Image (cartoon, rainbow, N blue to C red; front, top):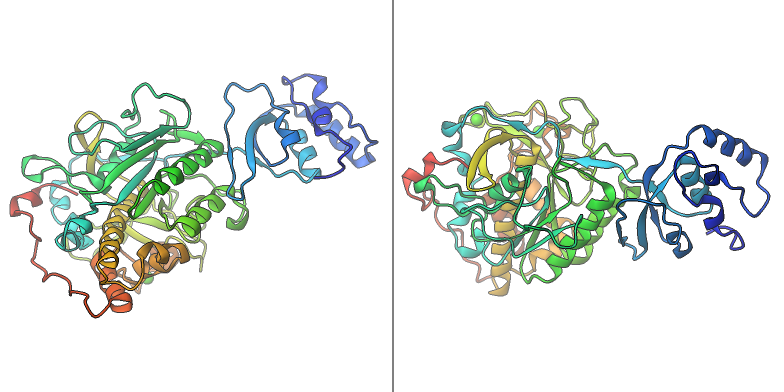
Length: 465
Ligand SMILES: [Ca+2]
Ligand SMILES: [Ca+2]
């Protein structure tokens, strides 16, 4: 942490922009290069939000800031936000303090709202990913006992959604209404995963319709939030997950341009740690910055998360006309992301206050993969508890094996490179079969015979998923 005789407080005390106190000389003589830099810093006294990790001495240097976010990093270090000039941030870095810019995240832009309700397209929505078959194997395979956590703009009220079992808003101690979502984004995301409406009466049904729902609001009503807010939100999601006894999926349909590689990215580190230590599965939108290469942002670059690109099924059940949506972010050539794709064009789901609407985006694809993997993971957990599986699926999540099997089972289009479509389009029943092949015991029952359109009444297929 540098020379212990130098109190960083004296040299980097943040003050209002324009104040010369911001460049007070350090207690020890500064080398010439440092003086030149400080002179340069006089030109740029604009303050930006940074996250300062560790050093309790630094923690006392709170810049006057309307809103300060604090938390604990994956390595157990305390962190806090502070308003600093770039020179002040560098001065801290030179003392060995970890300082990262508190960059802004948003729902992938633009979240595209469809002008029409693509009812015909949605007829086959569930069967595209085989989730009807999976759900038909029993309540656990519909997510019963599992928990889906939406880290997003909030979760609005909807008759098809369960009330959130836990909710937190990182911007306020006591949210006025914990079931509010002015942006609608988090409500739409939640419905794709866990809506339990009755399709016969116009409701909508998600991939894991018996799962519980929790929410953490990390994006403000304008759809934006800083790194610090999202780090805090991940910490809260981990707390919720640890209080829960079942399989847990955290969905993050948000992103920003990655400023550093995955190994040094604080958000990636937080997600990797939650995965490795607690067996929490993260599904993350790849981003809507395609079709250019190298457009997958953070936290989509997280190695052990399932990063989801958007497939356009072209309003037909046939797969040979499917294309990766133009907007879906691609990795650089040979890069590892996205992990797979899921339905991301014209997805009908829940909107606040009992509304419905179709949207397109990787934000919509991510919770489809998240809800389906929750139903699969919870079903496998029930099998494990009955002695029908040799391993707890959450242990497989910790090592990334669960994520790799789900990817391996996806429908690969050999003509499309993996930096565009990942391993291919989600096939959750195929993933189930791989798990049973590899980890089943002698008492494992085979999958229920497949009945076309599952056990849902035919009429329900007028309702989109
Ligand atoms: Ca198609
Ligand atoms: Ca391919």
